[in-house]
Amino acid sequence: MSDAKYYRLAARIFADFSGTIAVPAVLGAFLGKWLDIRYGTEPRFLIGFLALAFTLTAAMVIRKAKKYKQAYESLMKEEK
Image (tube, rainbow, N blue to C red; front, top):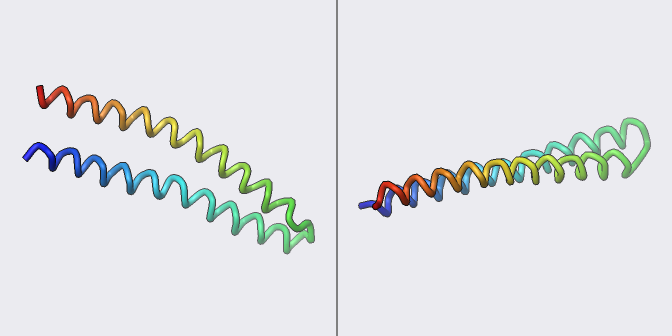
């Protein structure tokens, strides 16, 4: 029955990281493309916003990985 806790944690991690990676990239692409079309600067804004999205995503993933490491370690302690 203890495996259920690990599966729930894994599902939560998957969902959280999926959104963390996908949302900034999609928003950066749409906003960058829209600004490039509006100001005729293709592809400057697109590249800039994708680079910003990548940087922010990396920082968020590192922060969340540390949080989930602690959650996993607390589950391991409960098992003992």
